[in-house]
Amino acid sequence: MKGEAGHMLHNEKSKQEGHIWGSMRRTAFILGSGLLSFVAFWNSVTWHLQRFWGASGYFWQAQWERLLTTFEGKEWILFFIGWRDLVSQWDGSKQRVNSEIS
Image (cartoon, rainbow, N blue to C red; front, side):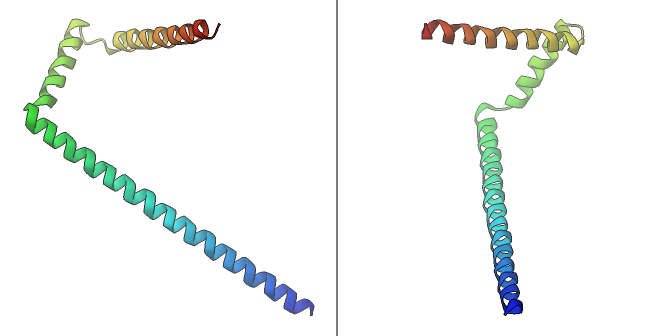
């Protein structure tokens, strides 16, 4: 009697583990397929937009080089300016939300 109960628990545990692994495989397949589809779609959109606008990648590279030339190649200055602007915008949005509530 005791042996049969232990055997049944073992079978239920194996079924549950099989179910978990099956669910994990399905989840990985769905997420992987979705990611692959998204990347393919994004690459396609980028290709079409570059074809429509011409060499848009060169435009942004030229803007970056012009910005670097302005700051004499000191990227850390751009980092601090960008961080300051990001933080100031973030603080401003908090103040607007608080003023709207009261």
